[in-house]
Image (cartoon, rainbow, N blue to C red; front, side, top):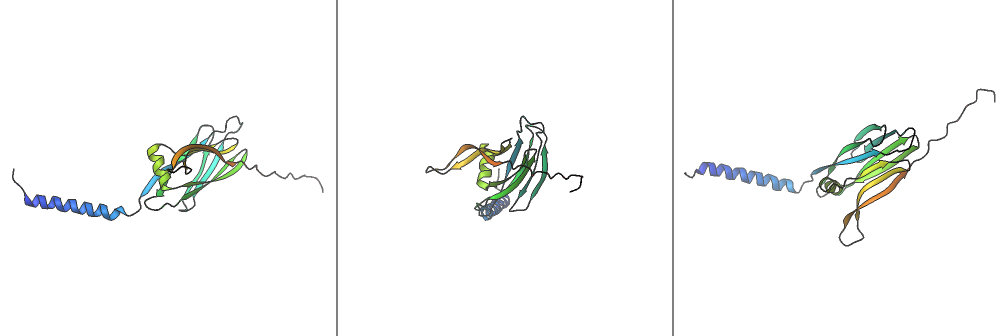
Length: 173
C-alpha cells in the first residue's frame, strides 16, 4: 500500500471546506418545526361539531378553516419557528365556533418550546370542551432557581354566547 499524496491533499481540502462551512453557519439562526394540536372533546351535546381558524400573527401565515365533527377528532398544524439566538414568540390567533358560541385564543410559542416539544414529547394540546378552550401541556416554572417544565391544565377561554336574533313581526307596528 503506497501513500498517494494527491488523494490526501484532496481529502484534506474537502475536510477543511466542510469545516469552514459549518463554522460560518454556526452563528446563524435555524428553524424548528413543532405541532399545534387542537382536539374536539365536546361530550354530551346534540351537535358536538366545532369549526376553527388559526393564523400566525408575526408571519401572516393562515392555516385556514378546519372542522371537527365529533369527539375526539381534531387537527394538528405543523408550525415552523425561527430558532437560534432569537427568542421571539410566534403568536397564533385561533378563532373557535360551536353551538355554544365563539372563543378566541392567542397561542404563544418560542423555538425553545418547540425543541422541548419535539424531543421530550411535551407538546401542548388545546382541547375544546363545553366549558371552553382548555390547555393541556407543560409550561416553564420559574419559581425555583433552575426552571423546569411542569404539567399544566387550565381554561384558556370561555365560550361567548352568540348574540340573540331579532325576530321581526309580519304585522303592522
